[in-house]
Length: 168
Ligand code: GDP
Image (tube, rainbow, N blue to C red):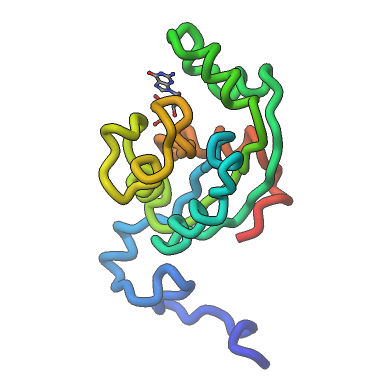
């Protein structure tokens, strides 16, 4: 019998994320999922691997991923919350202009960690070393999307993925 088949031991931390955590830390850390998108400006410049590397180096696991091209109507639906903003039409045109990679990232505090890795919306204001600081072309063509709350993450993941496509 391999170790994988052994049942978990009561009271013992298990799983790769919890291996070195005590019970108090475990309570504070939550394994979360977030939706990430590699945007058309980044797929055009062949940056998918470089961006994925940033996530994996910081401990986020890519548990679902697919390359698609949104229609303007689909992009409009995804960004419905921005209806009426001055950049809404331009954002729809940009997000449907080429292939995107939609992905589910999983890890400890994944929503907050991912936002930290990607940096501020405007690359001019993003911290050095973040994805947007290093790769974004403009405030609109800013290379990546990341959910901004766990509630939005759940909705955005459901927008793109069915349960069978997510493989932790
Ligand atoms: P995010 O959560 O950091 O992606 O930022 P928002 O939810 O505020 O905006 C969604 C997306 O709209 C951003 O990632 C940009 O692609 C785009 N966007 C935001 N603000 C502006 C803006 O002032 N001008 C333009 N052209 N695009 C913007």
